[in-house]
Image (cartoon, one colour):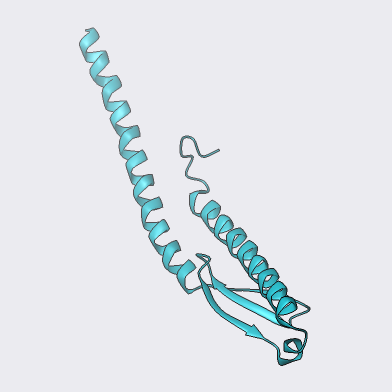
Length: 115
């Protein structure tokens, strides 16, 4: 009768495996949707009190830069520093947003190795 027990145990594992596959599929669909959302998302970083603004999408791809005419008289070095600072600001905001969205995607799925 040990074979019967082994078989029953196998079915239980099969059910767990099926559930795991369903969850993985949900995550995959959610990840695809998330990727599209991040592509559309716009995150603005700024420097110099808004004199320089950089917009990136949720995937950290730069979309546009806005430089106030007021800062142009400050010289190339100052403008370069402000653009760099604004890019870092936008990058940090977009990575934080992406991380939060990924965490909410996998939340409640109890995936092995995910916390």
